[in-house]
Image 1 (cartoon, rainbow, N blue to C red):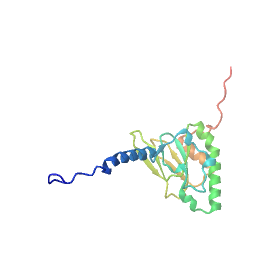
Image 2: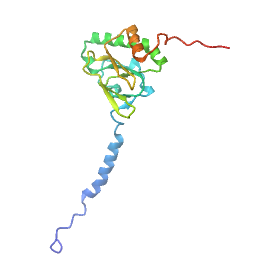
Image 3: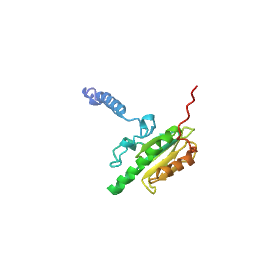
Image 4: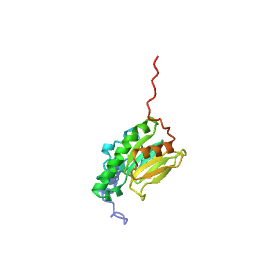
Length: 189
């Protein structure tokens, strides 16, 4: 002690050096963080029905809620479907996949995106840059279709729909003409 004052601080005070280590660690942690919980659907998110496997819907990139900003059909298979019996689950998934594949060409021809999700919530991007959530959990069946045309009300179809019935629902919601799957005639000169 000098001059009756307080003791001089010890020169090897670790707090001064630790603030730099803490800043470096914080920088590493923030650099490792993901882009957030929501993502906008991109062309790579288009349905790969072979990869949309119902056996374990808990460990999939499809669990991330999607933000929809254009006319889309979202095929959903929620975690609650895992509680179905194995045979029932396999049959429902096979039917859902087959009927969806049968209408996929009509959707593409009309500029309607086909997406898949295991997430309980899907968000619709509104013109005022807000998001409107659509909750898919708690429905009659934990699988089905969500029709979205931003700016209008959504339509949720739960369960499996045969391709004819599904196409009728798509025509009614998206105002698709009956001959939309026909090939346009080629004009030759």
